[in-house]
Length: 166
Image (cartoon, rainbow, N blue to C red; front, side):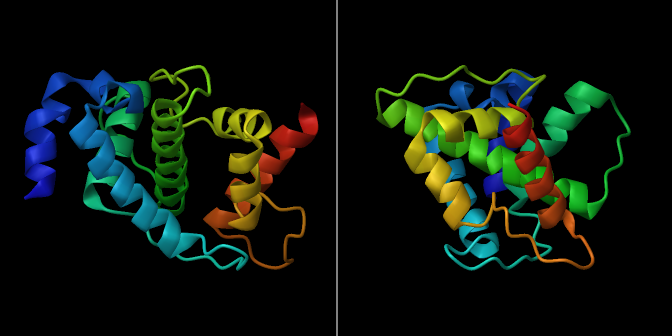
């Protein structure tokens, strides 16, 4: 039912409607709750665990809309890539919530950089509390375990490489 309402009220307005800054108060609050639940399930503070959860269907719909806009119709992505993109979208929504509830200024995402890790890293550098959250949730960490890489480890490596290159 929520996905149907979301489709009618947001997705029907075009791809730009999924940008966090374009969500009205109701949808930002609703999606933020979905993001909180997703991040809580996948990133326990001070526990570096991983899971293959790809998130609520509304979050997945947002990611698919962003990917469809940037890559065209008929895109296919792996579940690992989807989980990574849902994580980045969830963090983007959280950044917008922080922006609206504080006086912190940050560049607003575009359809081209909405799913960019670089935006997340830059905001973590500007906002030390957010940066500490990323570290405590093991989203960024320099102490990676060796072994088989999953989507979570690849995402962290990408973030760490962007931090070390800037």
